[in-house]
Amino acid sequence: MTAVDVSSVPRRTTKADAPQKLRKQGKRRFGADAAAIVIALIVAFPLFWMVLSALKPKTALDAGDAAPYTLEPSLDSFGRVLGVNNFGQYFLNSVIVALVVVVLSTVLAFLAAVALTRYNFKMRTKLLIIILVSQMVPVEALTIPLFFLLRNAGEAIPLVGLNQLGSLVLVHVGFSIPFAIWMLRGFVAAVPLEVEEAARLDGASSFRFVRSILFPLVAPGVVACSVFSFISTWNDFLFAKTFIISAQESQTLPIALLTFFKPDQNDWGAIMAGSVIMTIPVLIFFVSVQRKLVSGLAGAVKG
Amino acid sequence: MTALTPVLPEAPQGGTPGKGSTTAGRTSRRFSNGKRGLEPWLYLAPAFIVLIALLGYPIFQLINVSLYDYRQAQVSGKAPLNFVGLENYQKLFADPQFWTVLGNTVVFATACVVFTLLVGSSLAVLATRLRPWVRSLLFVVSLGAWATPAVTGSAVWLFLFEPTLGLVNKTLVAIGLTQFEGYSWTYDKWSAFGLVASEVVWCSFPFVLVTVYAGIQAIPTEVIEAARIDGASMPRIARSIMLPMLRPIVIVVTIQSIIWNFKIFSQIYIMTNGGGIAGQNLVLNVYGYQQAFAASLYGLGSALGVIMTALLMVITLVYLRILKRTGEAL
Image (cartoon, rainbow over all chains, first blue to last red):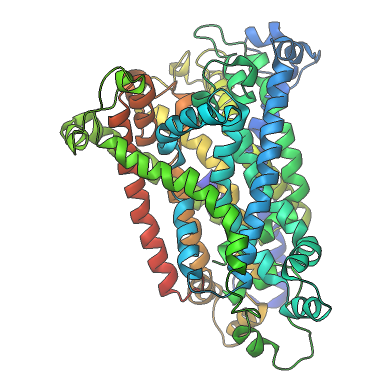
């Protein structure tokens, strides 16, 4: 794939005379477009195949039907997935955990971003470096101490102990905050000082300004950034696997999906249908915030 | 990095247009409320309490546990804790498997980084030459790949590369490569790593594409025009103007990719079923997890976690160095 797109990048010639150059560019541009379309098809193919396989009847899948279409689409696979004990419960659990994490981590990160961008205080740069560094801690390595921490915490506050959704919420909030702060900084800093000064002149307290003026102004960016907390929580499979040991009713979607993997006879139709169900919410979220996301990323990269 | 501000179209513009001194004024008056004592700390407190509890303390505990002989018996409190100092580390360094796993991690992560960057940035360059609808198509499709959860991405990959039912083998056999009849992609160590890497590249190149594309768009056209008027050729412009201006972005994207790819867990765990046949596809992350939760060697697993963290910290420090040298203001 790399070979294709490297070679397909047209190089503009400079010495050609105008009409010839124009024609050449048109041709090359067409070549670039064609290459891009081919690449887009390749990139989209796995997703297409996922949806298609979810709709194919089980008999066709078991026979290894390789046709890129299906004449008899069926929702049987979805039926099998939803028919599994508690699948609705798993879905609901995933939604609850993701939403709570998004709200909590975004609010906390927003407040921290306000402090780090709109105030100048001694430790500011140091704190920013700490946040940058904490973004890079391999969270997977922390499963061990977190496991013990949550086990002990659960004895004091049952809600956040092992086997509870609260434990997942807690760890994901912790891990989402650094990157969220990093991304929100750009948005918060972009609100001009004059707005703040005007608010102060009108007698607004600092918190009033943050809540009633700053937050609404940066809300779109905040929503875009929250997609990252959402995705990392929604996709998480390690913590769900580690912390939800015995309580089936607290299990989340990724683990439920893995139950369809069986040593010899994988039910591919069900796996693909489950994958579709799991991918759709993320896709919707992503596509709806993508414009803001791009600017947010650029802001985060701005450093 | 002022170059990037144009890609923030939605962000409210700083300063009122027309005031002659806005740019100069803004840099010196970045903060209006410099001396408000406790106020920033009130805003910081909630986030930092959470960070200390869920990142700081666990890191401390990770180091702590790595110094003990910590097994199932100690977890359930049936045996006394046994401080062993650096013994877990000595054990690891003497174990050839550790070095193999470390090697795997470096090779696998490097391959993922290189291919992600190559694919992402060449597509970003390509995207600047496209008709708008083709570009939108490319971006939407890439966002789709980006949004796909690791678990489902891995599932689809496993299905596509299934030995007998998978589309890839069927196609390869159909075009005459009969040796792929029933070929298992996860049986051989490097083909398994390649399989996982292809999934990783697929779902991580969009980040590079989007950021580098935004960077290219942010280069002011005047600069390029000026160079062209001065008679610079297109390759020359690319080398002497665009690349230097894109350098900070390329560095950030590279470091981000390195960090993400060193930490890959789900894809390896799912696609190679927990680390491959006889652990041939283990990377540090998965290895540490297996040592702790499958073999109940929590001390050893923690030592692996510490090594992993240290590795990433070194990369981070290099990152900060580079940021400083390019004159980034935090």
